[in-house]
Length: 496
Image (cartoon, rainbow, N blue to C red):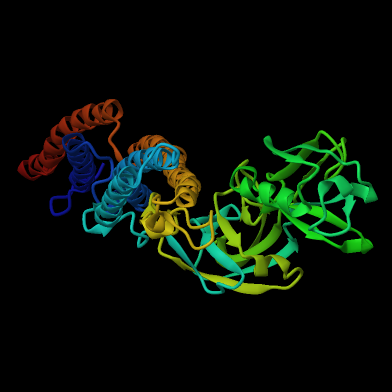
């Protein structure tokens, strides 16, 4: 044993250990008072990096949920405006059906219907132009995809939504290629006549024809043998507005006969004829249908965030009341071919332009985690514009019998367009926004748990450490006092 006065190694050692214990006690107190295991970068540099990354994710996901809630509210606002427009269109259709009852209505009643229709359409346009979320207008086309015909010779109307070929539509040209042309049902009679002025009694070169009844699409026409072929043709044409079938005389194949032609294109419009005697086709009659057009349509769309020319097949007559010239796809997009456009088979033509102005919602915590929504233009000039060439909701006029009939067709298309848009909004709200909110909530929960595991204090463990270090601190203080008293032993040697 050696005794030194100037350097007390034992005391220095006790002091060093006491300082370490005191620092551990201070650390435990800091962690318990703050609730955090990592209070500064020196506590756990690697853990701090991971923890801060998780915190950034949590804050991003929290904001994404808030963004989704805002998007949900915007969609509800738009859907509310569309619901009211739907209601107005149903009222207008009821008025058009009333106006079409020309056997009862006088001009005053029909004009009253037209006045009320104009007022309702004006209200619908006002809703379309004024519906907005904050300062952002929703239904006037600025928040979605709008399309305009550029080749009026081939296409009479077009409606392209934000979904083309199952992906998001982008701005650009629309190209069509008619694969199969639409046709009208047509049939040439087998009964022959010398001329259009011949009497029906001379059918098939005889003089014994006695006339009879011809039924076309459920409408009966009665003639006698003394009446001429022209008279029969005139009677058929007089009911063409009901049957949709017109008649003419042809000298094809060297013999004169009556030819029946359906006025509308496509498989939904037929000629169903029966007769009591040999006047046009004989007792067997005939039944023929037209063909629907098939068109390959190309437009620009976003595929994996890249602008791509997407091809979709549009088919005519998809709805039971559609003309074969009105071609649609499975996403609610449609275009109306003109008769000129219908015959240009196998050639690509640029016929329209699309302007894309979709809404973008950031619904994730990272870059690129966004979705787009297109709310199309529901102003009257853009509704029902692919049902009858030259007509839209804005231009319907029920003051004539044909105008009222056309109005019903246009309104059916307009109601369908608004309903499809409402369904698309509902699907986006349910399957994208609301589902995103749910899984983001789960993500935040699990990220918070991971961040807590790294950064938060384990109280039980830290209290155990604190208790141990406090005991060591007390012991260290005691032994340091004893170590400091050791040099006094050297004095006893000096006294001796």
